[in-house]
Length: 41
Image (cartoon, rainbow, N blue to C red; front, side, top):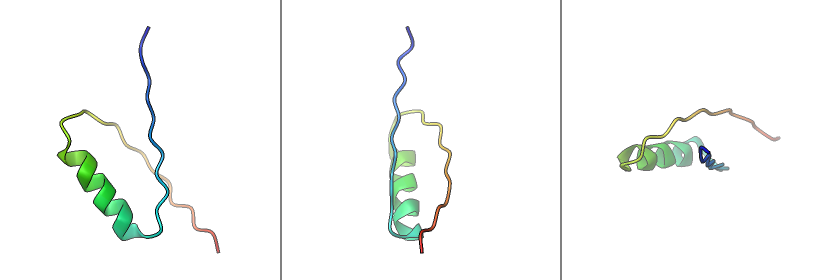
């Protein structure tokens, strides 16, 4: 049976999102990423 894992991140700024993505890209794992921007007033 295939193993599925997921990570969800909630960030306060676009800068934090970019830093997180760069950290994932530096890792040796193969990740598939998708994202959605949701702003709450």
